[in-house]
Image (cartoon, rainbow, N blue to C red; front, side, top):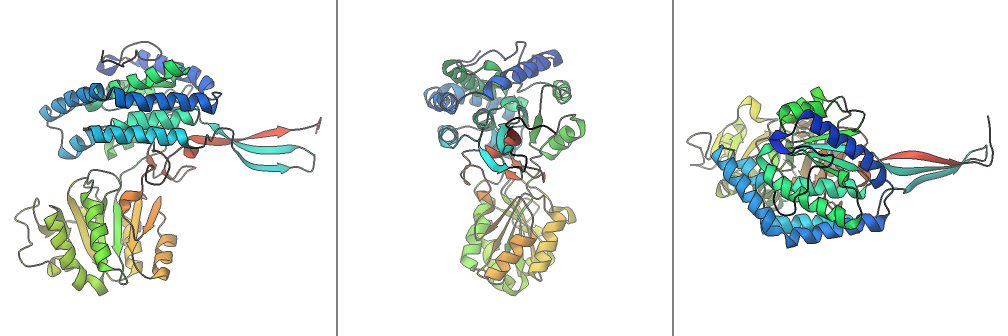
Length: 443
């Protein structure tokens, strides 16, 4: 057991050796713990999170050692470059994770917040207040940072959590969950507030998704296959963090220098993230001036451009790729609506803002879209007609992120149009209920 690890809450095994019975015991322990976490005062919760933030610094080498072992195993197994990028932890990324925990601790506690007050004709005093959801199961793949983000947000919002990360991050997740258990133990929180099922088998996961008596919400976060399997199998309500097919529309009134920078960095700064731009749409009236400049920048950044016929016609001489791995290549029909998660982008010329909106409605995934324009009317039309979870004006799609939007961190970006839509922070991990005070009223 790595330094800082703790036994699985509820007993039993962890990782590939975990059984369905172990998972059920862990889920029940989380249910019991959730009743305690729901009543913890803000000072206690913030104390646990502050301790966890410190441990992430003090035990950084332990976590990085575990992550290096995961990376070696992943490379030996032939894991793709995009997943390797998501799997890797560094001192800098651990520092950012710790900063996110501190930011969550500094945020107002949503539990008990009164969102509406009224007095009925009967004299009843009615309050609508925020309350924890209960037990949240998070299912994710090669992102060990999610282990900390999910725990911090669930705990601060009064919930217990069950975390089932992918097998490729099993050691990293165990090290991080161990630090959270240590923080819970030192701060007076119940161990069952976090159950670590990372690396467990598909059979165990499928059983977990049937435990509707102990689990209140499931949030899948990962590839399309994982999310569709969870949605298909679960007996428990789900909020889906579905694929990010994100668009940037360069309007005819765009500042082209700004547009080049936004499009380039929205793709190249972190191509394996769900908020990276996967398609650039260009208004025909600026295509002659913009497309060659944009392609030149993409090629300098090592980005392969999947181009529509008009984009191909405007590409600079010598930009054509030798194969699908270099330069500018003709777009196939399925390149639009595709999440590349790599240094690859689709690019198309459209005749109008209407055509851009129609393209996004057909191919988008309700995640993130952006418009670059100097025309206020165009910006307002775009933001009102495009109903994705986050729509930006003159800014990168990469800003659809809980940390960037001031939520401290996020448990995921919901693309399900339910109570939570977009980055899920503290408020999105609560429900609302009524507390009613009377003076003897009957009916």
